Image (cartoon, rainbow, N blue to C red):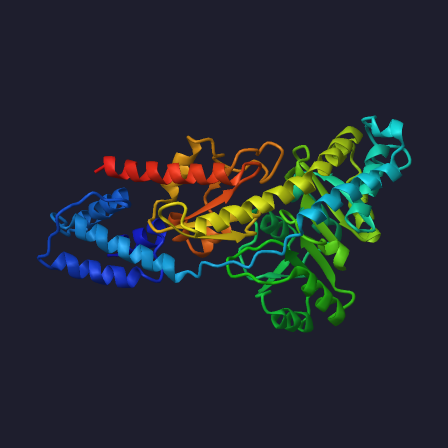
Amino acid sequence: MDRIREYCEKELGLRKETDAFLKELYKLLKSKKTGKQAGFLSLKKETEELCRLLKKEGYETEGKKALIHSLLTEHLKKEADAVPFETHPLKMISMKEEIENQYRLVDIMHRHFNGFEALEEGDYGCHIRYGRPERTVKVEKVLAEYFHAEAAALVRGGGTGAIRAMCFASLKHGQRVLIHDAPLYKTTQITLEAMGIEIRKTDFNDFRNIEKEIQKGIDVLYIQRVRQKLSDTYDEIRIIEKARKIDPKLLILTDENYAVNKVEKLGAAAGADMSAFSTFKLLGIPGIGLVIGTRKWIDIVHEQNYSGGGQVQGPEAMETLRSLVENPVLLGVQSLTVDEIEKRLNRKEVAHVEKAIKANIEERIILVKLDLPIAREVIEKAIGYGALPHPVGSESRYEVQALFYRIAKVMIDEDPILSRYVIRINPMRSGPDTVIRILKNSIRDAMKKQSKEQ
């Protein structure tokens, strides 16, 4: 049964239930029980493949397909239900605060640019005084003030480029970096491994674990702001404040992607040395990132990015700034939409929705758990109703229509069974009625498809 076990674990997503399923499956195959095949609402292809593998192993499945399907359905649901389906979302700022953020950013712009400058695009190349465009320098001053940091550096490469610039400026080969015990974003992992960093992991949800590691001896505390696992509860700001009391000189770096303009303050404003994030995720032009923090470290970022080809040019800096003005209020509207969709789905407005929860697994989203393992089919059908098939920058300027997508890769790695039951929905700029209509129609069509395939 080794091949069958491998199929169950790698393809079906069974882990805890594998042994129980195989035990009952083997018992069923040895018995004389048969079952009449009814229309399968889900898992038809999976059942067919399982029967094919069983035949290759020498097991007779004639007349047992319906029973195997029923057994598989039962154990997949048990596996999914064994995963606690709850989240601890970041505390979002209110719509009123989002409006105040827009006003404050524009007020800062008034104080840094005169009327003529506000209508100009800016310069190109390495200014003799600054080593980068003069207009980029001005925009960076505005952004530093807006994000309550000493200094800021616009860099190429979006969020990944910003994280790499932050790490290159502050980390050295062999240093001990403490991160949360969860899968790292792939590009961050590559950066740290390429730098020869010693990665240490502990559960950030209990600060006592962090305290123990600091006392043992670490060089850097690296915090990713948004949730990596459903069970995550840690508060980045409290971690920074407590860590600073234990070791005032500890280097603290934060990844703020997907949290900017949603939370009260970023890590750099709470005492971290540097914070990095993508401005592309804030409606900016593609490929631009921002690093904010203490002047000492930001100066190093600039020094290391002296090459003309690495500079964010004046017109790009201005476009990034102007786009950022629109971001807070749009995020406020989106947050209200997420709240409304969650409420309506939990009132059972859509059939086969078992539960809906808000989350900050990457963007601010709704995770929708279905009572049948048809999440992949529903996502496929949603595209036909206008839902986006994949993220572009996750809340970038190009993402207007709602996103119906698989759950985050880190969640799948943690609990692969959820990919069959859970859909990730980001309404983007759409309203609750649109999202609910698409979900309702897509579930209906997925069910019809299953019936027609019988």
